[in-house]
Length: 108
Image (cartoon, rainbow, N blue to C red):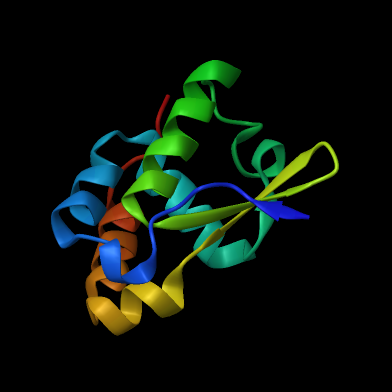
């Protein structure tokens, strides 16, 4: 297994974490990860009506903002929230994003 680049915890910036869920697909993705824990990228967004390359872009934005962590295992990419890092750096911020995702209708 290997980990895909992500910022170190001390390099995560609040503005980037807040900007990351700006597209409706991303808060839905974060919400799903909060419920399911670590999942393959296909299992997370496979039923969203979004092209695979677009989903890859969304996963990259979340990872580079420090919201998620991606691990490569064989041909699978497993994604999980960086809840511990985010809760330590910005207490309550992730919960606010998740609560906002619950109020936002899913992407069509």
